[in-house]
Image (cartoon, rainbow, N blue to C red):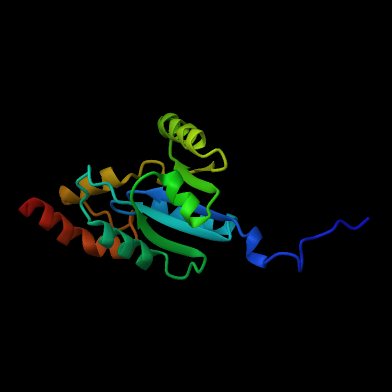
Length: 178
């Protein structure tokens, strides 16, 4: 028995799965990049959504974080990088995304991420959260640790994409001058 298909009845992109990978990415690390590369294989379109939170004092301005990510994901045709303000679920609805991708490094990440997933589901029931476990070699990486090690003069070039490694010294210089 042959099942009916939607071929010819609806535009091809109606079945396209769009996902959003949100975060501050201040800065993006190789752990983030690994999640992006893996999520890009799972979804037709992956939007990296850089949070623009005026309550935080990021090391890199939002526009620079977007640029650094764009430079880091060159070659991933299905990946788009942009920024957003406000509620993630509202942004997801505006962009037609039904999936939020989150990376988990350790059990300690799970509790917070689970609470956020439940809140997002409460606000917009149609938005699902998919968790991707970090590769073992990235479980210790966080943007906070990268900034601290770099601030203290450590070499983080093997832990962040090359554009970030190049931009960190200037960003740290601006931060210490202010």
